[in-house]
Image (cartoon, rainbow, N blue to C red; front, side, top):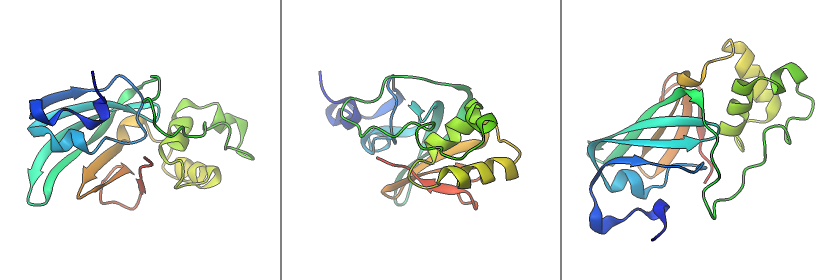
Length: 159
């Protein structure tokens, strides 16, 4: 028994990591302890992200899109709780708060976008589906993105 977020370096490298708790971000140990080509499947925000690990000159890079389905798991033990999207949505129209995909965006961008900025983005991008979002873990940092990891819509992940 141990802390799954720390991995298990003595048993690495891994070709698959599947998390069964909601994470604020991807534990850095996971890409570091994965083989090139490995897959990491993890619940982040209220989505399930599928990352592929690649070797680069700067170390491992894990990147991928969210799957289309929502995912609700108990939070990682000891992780800082994120404020719920509805709790921090003052002044946002009820029609948006009632939309599961908007709540996903609020949760994913917590700490980066205020609810009104998130609403503006959501409407401007025509209410993007979950699979247009992704996560990149590389060079000691990690970020969420819409459509392109190097594009205009990127947000650092909390955690």
